[in-house]
Amino acid sequence: MISGNTYRQPVLDALDRVALRVPLRRLGVIGEPARPLPSDTAEVGRLLSDEGFAAQISDLARSLGRDPGAVHAEAAGYLREMGATHTPRATADWGRMSAWLARAHDLVVDPEQLRRLRELDRTQTLLFPFSHRSYLDGITVPAAVSTNGMSPAFVLAGANLDVFPFNALLRRSGFVYVRRSTTDLPVYRLALRCYLAELIRNRRNLCWSIEGGRTRTGKLRPPTYGVLRYALDALDADPGARAMIVPVSIVYEQLHEVGRMTDEARGVRKSPEDLRWLWQFGRSQRERFGRAYLELGEPIPLRDRTAEFRAADPGGAHLVERLALVACHGINQATPVTTTAVVCLALLAADRALTLDEVQSTITPLARYLSLRGRRVAGAANLTDRATLCRALDDLARSGVLTGYDGGTDAVWRIAAGQHLVAAFYRNTAVHLLIGRAIGELCLVTAGENGDQGLPAAGHEALRLRDLLKFDFFFPSRHVFAAEMAAELALADPSQAEAVHEFTAEQARQWLRQSRPLVAHLVLRPFLDAYHVVADRLVTSPAGERFDEEHFLGECLRVGRQWALQKRLASEESVSLELFKPALRLARHRGLVADTAPGVDKRRAAFLEEIRDAVRRVGVIAALAEGSTS
Image (cartoon, rainbow, N blue to C red; front, side, top):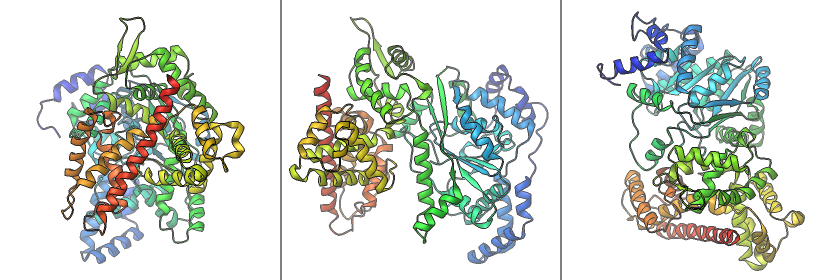
């Protein structure tokens, strides 16, 4: 929080120019005093007078060895901290403010998707877990809901965004500020669980980032489970309650804040969200940055899907995790491919300047593949149209992601210095659509290298890669995954679609020679190179010493920068904390981080060899792709 008046007058003068003095006056920042938010909103008031809530407080106080009255008073304080409501005046004022903040983009939403949701909204709570690539998501998603004939949604926002003077306005517009770290706050967790249950019981719609924070890589992060767990508790407590999960994807042609996020991925400290930050963020949106595409995934009946999972696993040990993965899979399935994503993919793959013809020739087989797989393209754009590609190249050059040169016989574009992570962010918005194809290609390399054992080797390789990458990507069940692999191999040679369960090593090599596009080097190499750095540093990590994660990741950044300069990494985009952390999480999952574990040195060395072998096979695909291009 900024003290004093250092930024007060410049901010107010600028906001006045965009007709926002009215909401500020109502907040009491200027002119008349603010109208205070009622201490007890409807849900908070009901909870504080509810006997069931009082009983839960008493039980918790008993387990903590504390006075029930003191625990009740603490819970009441937390409820009032998170309590939110919708008032017509605040909602209108926030609509004006949010339009100013989001003015850099034109929002595109499918009206038919909204029409179907309006019907569901009449009978049950709608839960909107959304992908989180920008601060704008928490503005755009609830606005799309409330302005299209549905009940206004309550938005779960991080307490870090509880910024004066707009926090009071947002509380009256349905924003519920939630603390992120609650491990040592059992009373807070109970208050939040009961508050969300009360919202669901009263058929309020909820929006939240299922990732818990913005992605720094462009692809979906691992989900958080708290909100879904509390939603399940609410349904279990009230047999009549109904709720539907509606996965929401929002993807942008470009974003002003990507540069700052990629700096954080390189280890730069994140700036605090205060009044100066809000002013700077708002100012950055003055320049138009294309479209934002909001897509609503297939609705998931929460009670029905829960019953299905409980029937398969009566213990329900991983029920919430499975529901979260289903929701994330739904978000990925709803995410369209943008022209920006495929252009960045082509230029990152080449890592040199390309002409428009070269960009088009790289993208054309990819566009054909996406069409065969039924993948949606944002705005129904033609990914092979020269004018469309040229416009995307020029837009990226204008924003500094690319640099262009037109002083020779042909105009060329390449990734600008220091912008590889930014370009990778845009590419990664579509990378999940290609992960199956990439794994299928590596399986064919394995099959081609294993003679008569080609088919078993390919099957083993698919499952091994699925396990290797499970902390970076969302995969379906093994049965569904096997079917998807068969579909990918059939696309390699449609005439041999029936042979995918009995192919030979020679057929595998033939399929690789004739199959286009080849994408493993485009999709997997940045991640596997980052895994290589982590595995290498683990092998050299001293045995018997306490593992310091912050120091280890810092060493990975330093060594990664060295390897990038030496061209031991294909691209500097692999030098990222956001890529190192899932690799370290995998190593910890395999018991490779605890130095006291028996045989850890040998298992670390085996892990390093596994990664090196995967990188080598990706190199085989890269060589095949380069030979085809040549």
